[in-house]
Image (cartoon, rainbow, N blue to C red; front, side, top):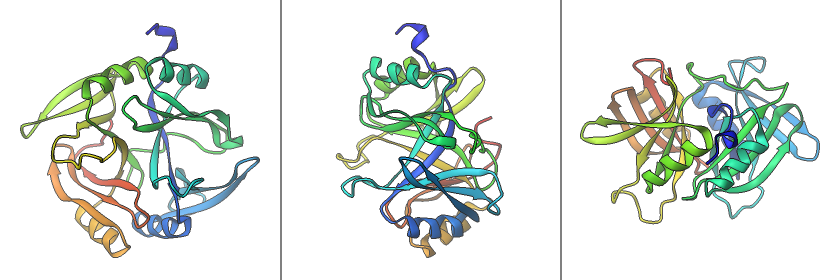
Length: 263
């Protein structure tokens, strides 16, 4: 692909949750991570919940909206910050992906487009607005990592390199291969292969990791709040982690890093 079609940045910038039960989700995440929240009324779009660290005046860490269509699964969407939204959307289509929601402006929230990679994992590209500061991450209580689970590893390497200029660096973790997505010296995320241990119809997906002080305690608290643990707390090189689905069915992970993940 020609160089000029690449996005300008490609770093994780925002995440939001599409939930069939926003009140249930709001209660869960406020109790699990100690978040507060407020609601923005976006002209032509409706209400949008913004989660904050600490009190309502704290930095914004994530958003939430209601599912438009009840047939869609609840999910977290990872948005990657870009300098030119239309160029990024064009790069997605040129690389074999799809544009699910075209570039749109959401007032002070920012301008965003929802996309899908060639294997079906959705993600977003975004340019920040003046009400929400993208990039509040890599601190306790916030997103500190994003990870793609897919089956076509080589196809994903090609696609995300063409769209964002990412380089795939493979590492050996206890006999299995883990891919780091790199922009220069910066690790922007990871990738794992969905092997035969995954259900055959389980879709490829991006998942956010949230930094917690105590992974085991956070997992136990999540269960008490209605979550289902998918991978019990376990040690990996970057720290101790667990994966789960929240009470509405959206996937997420928590991790207690040994070092600042993403640096």
